[in-house]
Image (cartoon, rainbow, N blue to C red):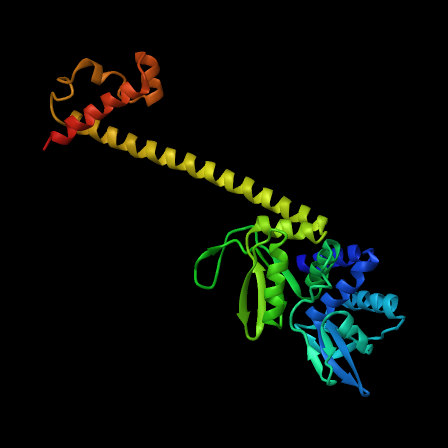
Length: 312
């Protein structure tokens, strides 16, 4: 399974033990994220469709506990990316009004609520259950701890967490709900689907923790630690390599200056004595033998280079 699927399985396992007051919030989120209004045999209800059969089983468990109705899960003929689709029809019209999704007006017209009913998420525990169930229905999370190139040639690390909703009002309400918990989500429209998303790894870890996906948090944190260790090792390696290259360049420059002076007859013998000592030793060796600092020795080497630069 993908990381997203593992997160959803963990969330559904936790929600199975949710408080009675949170069951309606869970069902409302599932219908919002994966449901659509449908009329069958003259009855208005809601059809839930998902690749995740466990999601529909969970919805059926809630419907049975709240209304005493048994639901039947069916395999759809249509597939998405080779994966089977499952559906379940909830024929209890009262479910729609109880979940804050639709209600009948005084004139008998059906009124659709495109936002999140505030009474469904009135308590903190219900807000938490709603967000977790909504992610299980229409959420996704992806990450790539190694630096990759995107289609435009730019660098990216691929951390992405989102809810995909079919209503802008629901997207706005979800952002407001999450802001109450300290999360800062953004909204982007993609072909009549509104993505409510975050991209930084720290916020994603916090979001997973808020939904109760503790195992997923540990997995992501371990990968972040591995990435940090790898980055530190690369920085140290690059620093060492740069210092070696710098030392080699300096050595080649000094040796070329010494050889140029030696090529001139009598020029080397006319140098000051302190400039002729141990000409082929390293900077550390010269400093140790002469009892000088490396800075002082480096100054003498620069002096030799200056002398050589004045030669035609």
